[in-house]
Image (cartoon, rainbow, N blue to C red):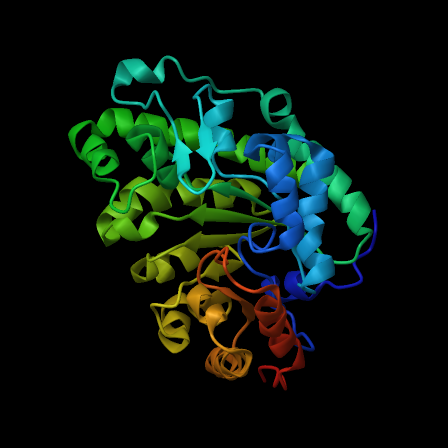
Length: 347
């Protein structure tokens, strides 16, 4: 095992003191980087995911080109529904399409609880190869989609701003919905365990659509399943929950024992800290669209963000994925401003 030369992210998640705030960006391996776009022209999305050499190359690009403090494996949350037997198409600039969605209890019979080594081994191979290639430069983050977010796609069959059909499915067929959520949870635990065994230093659970649910529904349809995942992995790996828009449940998310909580730009850092408590690391919460501002504005806004998070463990990140039209030098400015910030460790 390579010892890490830069373990800022891990120390922050463990609540240890650090010389400065660690920084990485969601969707950092991808579409805003010219080198990634070259590969996108040559290979389909799933070819890029399923070829460990390509996935490794893409994962490492932002470490080398942007200077981030962590790599996140290049993959997609929808590899889990795919491994469970659903057809998943990813159409460039249009998003995901699952042409045969789940609509009833009978549809669950065509899902499988896969052997993750067999169906998702390519992700583990990519993690192992990335780990070797990184040679201890920075930690490696693995990830999975939260069960609620995966249910949204599996039932709706495509992306949506509201996921009305997925919500209606849960409200009209609660028994089927909870059985599906439990199936996804069981597969996700096995999948993330495989990622840890393959070298992931941290795992993040992405609940992209958690914010579509009110507090009670978030508990019932999302958090109770995320809680199972965090509990299953707690002894093995550091965990981060990112439930976009579900700030109302930060206190309950912190109570899962997760080491970090991602937040978006719609909540003030002070309020997030009050809700989450003093110990958990908060990750975020720069608006990705602000990276389109002139560089002096980015630098000023990043410093304001860091000021607002001072006094508790913080990982500098965006409040959602980086946008494809962000100039590379703007991403570098974001990272460099964090690195150069005069850091006052919490007393």
